[in-house]
Amino acid sequence: MSENETEGGGATAAEAPETPVTEVEQLKAALAAAEAQSAAARDQALRAVAELDNVRKRAAREVEQAHKYGVEKLAQELLPVLDSLELGVANAGRADAASLAAGQEATLKLLAKAFEKFQVLALDPVGEPFDPERHEAMVMQPSATAAPDSVLTVVQRGYELNGRLLRPARVIVARAPD
Image 1 (cartoon, one colour):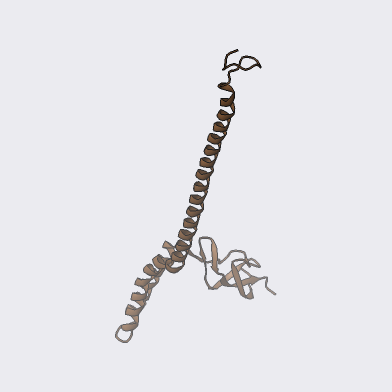
Image 2 (cartoon, rainbow, N blue to C red; image 1 turned 45 degrees about the vertical axis):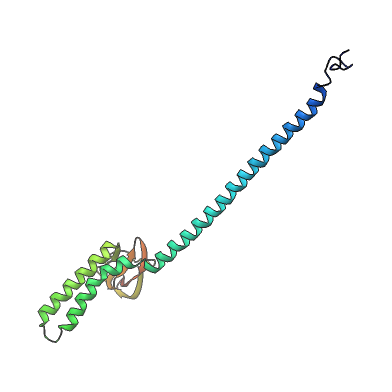
């Protein structure tokens, strides 16, 4: 037998020690790859946590800004109404009733335009059935012309904002005559 052969079947002596070394090297390489993969996953997780934290902080700032300046556009639309009212008050002593009435009508139109722009709708339920979700009954009045439990007169208009009730309409409700 030669020096490189073993008695067990032809494997050389040089090959026998290489098998455990190769296996150890493979395990070391696999461990290094697993550690690299673990480090990459940890780095990715840390980045995701940091990004989530940034998103939370950004959202909190945006909510704060919305609360702070949410009515800015509405306020800008109401400034001409305020200007018109101030002008009317300043000229009240010098103007005649007709010009004051015209100024009030113009101011009311400015306000209605601002409300319309922001989808604030007036409720004018005359003739509609009384709805306790949208109307507040002030009194019931007998009526021969209106259907019982319908709105006879609006005392104070109600308003909705995008379908949400801001203020119920205050109404007089019809009832059957005695």
